[in-house]
Image (spheres, rainbow, N blue to C red):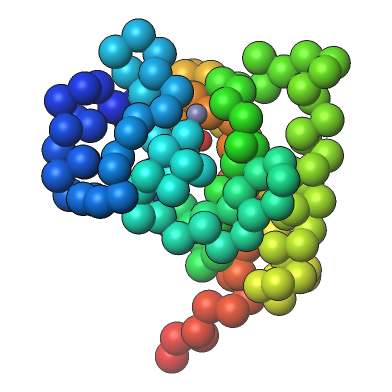
Length: 141
Ligand code: AMP
Ligand code: ZN
């Protein structure tokens, strides 16, 4: 998951139709799903954007508010960060703070980065999970 091969891209291209679906970020025969979202080549709603990153809702939410904070630059994981690129991390945290304010969940939220296969990373484009909103859940009974 997270990378498409050329056949899957053909199927997506048929589904998304115009504007022309031109894959970005090919790695051998595979391409990165988050780079496609950032390039507006998939119909994912981007709820926040600045010069460095985008934020969109996780397709498979694990909390009432589950967002993904994703640098525009393709960096595979924390393992790929270096002195020059690690500054993105503070920008991601500041975006999380802004999202907490926007969604009214400053009272509690979790930030999580799965790094590497053993930790459950499936999309190899650095991203931070923003999880919150439990206090907003309707109380049953
Ligand atoms: P990770 O396990 O940290 O690599 O998480 C990848 C996350 O990306 C998962 O929580 C997926 O539900 C989410 N995801 C995968 N494809 C999409 C997509 N097209 N739109 C939104 N979220 C996605
Ligand atoms: Zn990417």
